[in-house]
Length: 388
Image (cartoon, rainbow, N blue to C red; front, side):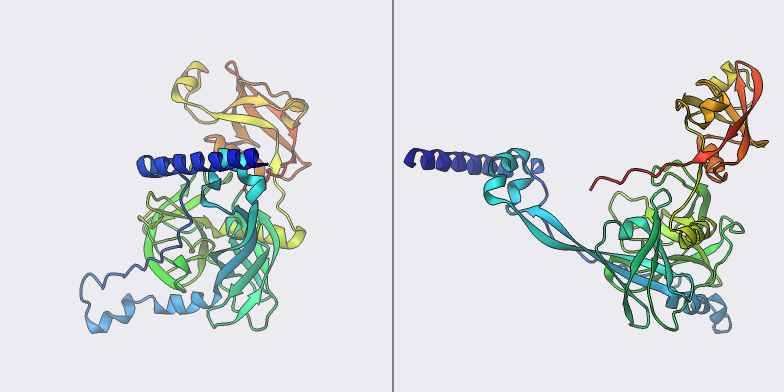
């Protein structure tokens, strides 16, 4: 017994010594210690130029904010997570030898986000990543009321989710038109950044139809320079009249804060997801079972195509819809039901919009020959859950 205890004591001493050396000379090798969140408050600049008193109200967006803000809510989620008892347990070596001895502890983790009440019945649109894996969800309204919420359904491929609360006289936002937005239009982002409370930021539409960002499977983002920060996710992007035009989703940032590049899911997409989830509890999309690759100018020239529009079919799922229709790897998909497709994202969007079970015509170019293939559209499989 004494020998066993001596061996254990020596092992602990060596590990502590090694940890001290690493912490002193190579601290970057260690996992970060759990520091508390730092609340950063950004002070907005005053008006760049003084305006005559007669035009001051004309330059204010108070009416739009007053119209939209009551429907924007803060979302607090909570769940229990298991974590090691000691800080160096992030090291796999330490976990292997001491994990069973010291074990793990359970702690309660919380996170903040935003959402938008979209109907008096209590349906709320937010981002899926705000409520994913949450065990408890609390919604706080601008008037101070708080409600427990439940998830009606979620669509990870657009990062949207629908919640519901039970309450009376719930304020609902008016839907605008994301299709009529133009680059340069004024927009306002409303949410709960960093948990400081309901906040409004102003910007313009910087770009439309942003895709290929690797954020979601289906991307058609509104890009804006209205400040969007952590906690704004799921909040409202509204036009100058206070109508909902997008759901704030993500930012491009190397610091974690706003650098003027934010992305919102258009309200047209959000409404489609909302209606399907409320009706069926899920989102149904078309699928043909192919892997796609971009058609580069060099490939277009080798295929003797006049322009680099379309997508190369890189793989065909055996016995899938496209396989049964006769599609082959190497085919260039140029149109669906007579409508030309520009790239793989356009193909993905067009196929997803097709109703499963219906027939569609795929126009492909095969070794310089144009072929029309009749395919019976399948149902898009659900994506696997993300690893925690």
